[in-house]
Structure formats: structure tokens, C-alpha cells
Image (cartoon, rainbow, N blue to C red; front, top):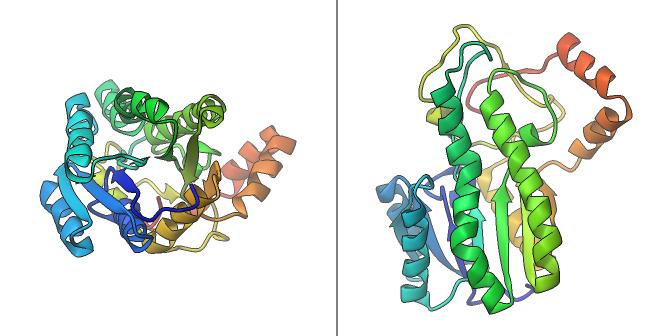
Length: 271
């Protein structure tokens, strides 16, 4: 999808962070944007920031009907849908033995099943249209294990990676592109989605000090480039490939390294 001028995108979780950064990047590329978020006021604020080529829409990704309303808003306002970015996500914090089942369900529902809901609403549209592009936001945490204090999030994001791969195999021959965005350290407010800290005194582990903290606006431009060039795997920090090769070469050794030399980070700075 080289020419993005006049295309229409729907972005979930777009009131802040990567979603906002990407919505703004889409607008700079000449696209029209349906900015959605569970925070309706935040979504409308980002849409106002963009101007006439955007609308703000409330969307709770835990509700199928909200995806349907986002679809209807895009078609009613702009007459088409070309790109859907499934970006909304939440985090939890706690040792494996402390996290209740309901918290697992909450995080899996928002981070993984939300993509399933989106697929139910938009896949048939893209298949009938014969073109389109889906962007699913996963995480470094879905590519490799470096923490044990937020396992529901990591498991959900690993599921997003696998779902995205399967969708790419199925959809690309049908003209629909798929990008799996895997953010490393990005300045977002995702730590603010932690409902309750189920364990006290936890050190927050990150993927490694070699990964610098980047801004959401930079990620947004990466997403625009990935859509234009039909790129599937989009890590925000390409050097993560070195760690993935290291893990694949000696999986037991990689896990032992995480045990022996954990990377402790400042809460609130990592995606």
C-alpha cells in the first residue's frame, strides 16, 4: 500500500502513547483517522489535534459492539476503511502465585481477545474489498522472556505474535497486509493501566540496557513505513534479533542468563 494519501485508518488505544503517535503519523501521511480509545475525551482530543481528517470515537476493545461502532463511524464519515491498528492494551503486576484468575482473564481479554474481536468485524470487509492492512501491537515481551512479574501480558502478546503470523500467511495472498509491531522500550503510560499491584517490592525487569527509550512519534513513523513497504515483523529496536538468535541457539542458556543477570528498569518507561 505505497500510496497512503486519502486512506482511512482505525486505531485503538489512540488517546496516548503508541496509538496517539501512530494516529498523528497517519495524518501526516495524508490519511484520515478514526481515533478510538476507552477514554472518549482523550480520543476526541487527539482527533481535534489532527483536525478535519479525524474523528474521535469511544471504543472498549472488550466489547464487540464497540468495534462495530468504530467500523460504522469510519464508513459513515469517510466512506471506506483501509487500515486497522489493534493497539489497545493493559498491564498487570504480580508474582505468578499472587495473580488471581480474574486478573489473567482481564489482561488476556484486553490484549489478545480484543484482536479476535477486531478480526470478526474487519476481516470480511478487507477480504471483500480485496485490499487492506492490519497492524497488531505485540511487544518484546511476546518475543522472548525476560520477566515473571507480568506473565498474563507476556502470554497475551506472544499470542498476538502467533495470531499475526497466521493471519499474514492467510491474508497476504488475498491482498491484505499484516504488520506485527513489537515495541521495546517506548515512552508510554502503560504502567498506568496496572489495576492493582498483587505483590509488593517487585523489581521491574526489562529486555536489556542496550535498548534505548524512544518516543511514540518515532514508532508511528515506523508503522507508516511498514505499511508502505508491506513489512510483517516490526521491532522498534532491530538489535532484538541478536537476542532472539541467542535464545534459539541455546534456550536453556538464555533462561539461565535471565536468572543470573536480570535487567532492572524504572517502572513506567517500558512497553
